[in-house]
Image 1 (tube, helix red, strand yellow):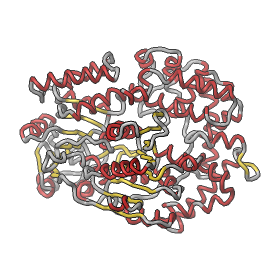
Image 2 (cartoon, rainbow, N blue to C red):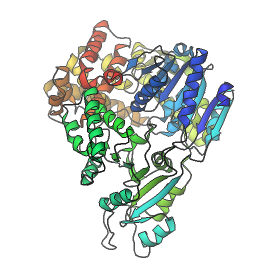
Image 3 (tube, helix red, strand yellow):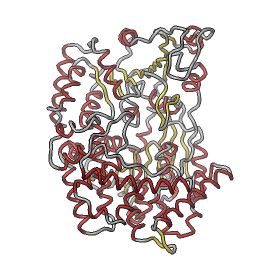
Image 4 (cartoon, one colour):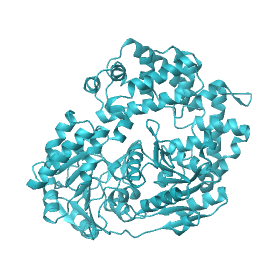
Amino acid sequence: MQFVQQGHSVIVSAPTGAGKTVIAEHVIEECIRRGEKVIYTAPIKALSNQKYRDFETLFPGKIGILTGDVTINPQASTLIMTTEIFRNRIIEEKSSLYDYAWVIFDEIHYIDDFERGSVWEESLMFLPDHMNVLGLSATIPNIDELAGWFKSIHKRPLKVVTEHQRPVPLHIFFQCQDKFYDKFQRLVRQGFKSSDMPYIRERRIPRQAFVRPNRMTTLTKHLLEEDFLPCIYFVFSRRRTEYLAEEVSSYDFLNAQEKKEIGSLFDELCRRFDVIGEPSAYKIKPFIERGIAYHHAGMLPTLKEVIERLFTSRLIKMIFTTETFALGINMPARTVVFDELRKFYGRSHANLKTRDFFQMAGRAGRRSIDTEGFVFCRINPHYMSPRDLRKIVHSQPEPVYSRFNATYATVLHLYQKYGEKLYDIYPLSFHYYLENKKFRKKALEMLRAKVQLLKDLGHIRKNKITHKGLFASQVYGYELVLAELYDSGKLEELSMHQLGMLAASLVYEPRKGASKPPLKKPALSLENFADKIVSSINKREKRMRIKPLSKKCYFHLSNAVDAWIKGESFDKMLRLTDVDEGEIVRNLRMCIQILRDIAEAPISEALQGKAWRLIDLINRDIIDSEKQLRS
């Protein structure tokens, strides 16, 4: 705290549950006391929403939020936003940040995220000189490198605070062949039976070496008998969270009084968040009444919030959830269980990173309640070797690396400001600070290739940003596709329904096995036009070795979006797609953000009016994020 008092920037590296949020609260309190402003950035909107509620309770009337689909009290002394919005503000309109003395980066190790890490890096690279930084992170072994880079480009002090001890220590157990082990070597000797146990990484069962399955009944009985509840059970599949909840539903974890309490609380919360008549709420209620719940991204955001609030009541004894439940949301339990120690990382399945393991395991052990937290890893010897297991649970967390890869919109903004001197910006990056000459050269070549592509496509002419380039610079993430549609005049010609379908096609990413329903003529013609544009852009990108390629447009949600714009009910819209209801809500909220970007770009009044009207049509009922936040 003393570094904050002295006005120094600070990066804190500490285990999950070590109380990092207290430091953020102190900064906010100090800024409010001094009449200064502070920005709080979070990696995901769910965490932004949670922090808005938490801080609004602590500092009533002093908190605002800005996430693209939500704007509440934007002039507040503490403004919560996604890191993307903060980065955009720095690059587009730095003057709008003059009143802010601090920026807090929650989960700053996201700088290592393959898809979005560049946003954190750019935010730190171009940070205004007058702003101090508080970075909060899980354990970062190379935190001194991160701090050294920051000090080298900003020429001002940055203090590093590291904490390796958890306030509540963890005790790790393993379930293997339906037996429990708390010593790693004993697990290897008896659970793996290494002399006759062939380890394979492929998902197939070998002909030899029978493995006794780890039964849920064995685990559940053990957790009950040893008083290890409540428990957060991490699963890397949405469907499996529900399957496992069903599997343990023969157990009833609540007494008569608790049943009465949780039933009353569930009904009250469902009324409050307007999900009382939703089939998904009706479906989960029998589990809730037994002290069981599940939680995943495919659920309605409002129903997820109901579950989160129930969990904080301590009446939920077992919750089956995907990993986002571990990210920053302050919901500890006595025990954490890992269904497996492999997950999908972008392109393929891989063993859990040590950092991710401890991010989730860190939810075990409640401060001031438990003397230790308990972690159970369910192990199948066919899919996990002793060596890999040791690496996951007994290694240092991975160091953070740079994922610097500026978007086309960022490049356009920087080119508008620096022109051909843009390339002098790259040495300010964390990537340049960490990498050797070979990789620095490749990164610079990528930057030059992007600028050349923008010139080839007419975004830059005679070293000046064109009107097309100005438009593209305002629509982060989808700039090249939208700019071609705009430049061709097609964007102006689209009906309101087609504009909604287009926005959905830009944000939607089909899950494996997703089917696309038959499309009507307006959607088909738009899909064909968009496919040609993306194909042409991708060919150029491949030729110039630019990665990742601009995203393809997926029109799977067209029929559903069309029905929603026409005013149909949410239930009727659901019947037009096989996409999970929570995913539809999230995608429509992302559509609102894109449409807002389009409406605020330099376009005709007619197109602006169309975009704003469409936002009003989409942003109703369950899609309205602000309504949920104000509940």
